[in-house]
Figure (tube, rainbow, N blue to C red):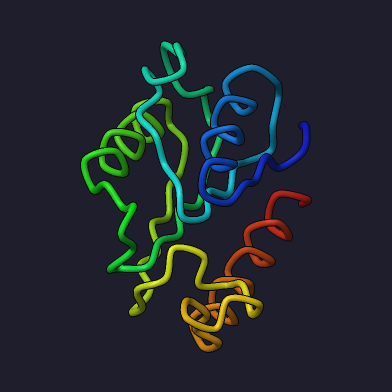
Length: 122
């Protein structure tokens, strides 16, 4: 079944790339999503589900990239969950960044991530 590829920001793009190159159980993209064409992938792997997490007002958020990736995942019969959080920080889960950190949103995100990870192990 493989492992779950996950990454923050630019690392989310790397997780996408890994998901298109190796067998994975899923992908978790945190504050980052790229259209597959940006790294030369032709399609999302068949049946692989993903979560995409973003702050609503993340200054690096590109809705068209999120939409393109979600469409690629759906067209490959993968499930995709897109979660928007009512905050502005790009790395809103990082408590060492007080200007970006949003405790309630971070706690909600981690609960969702753990649920996704748990459902892939069944």
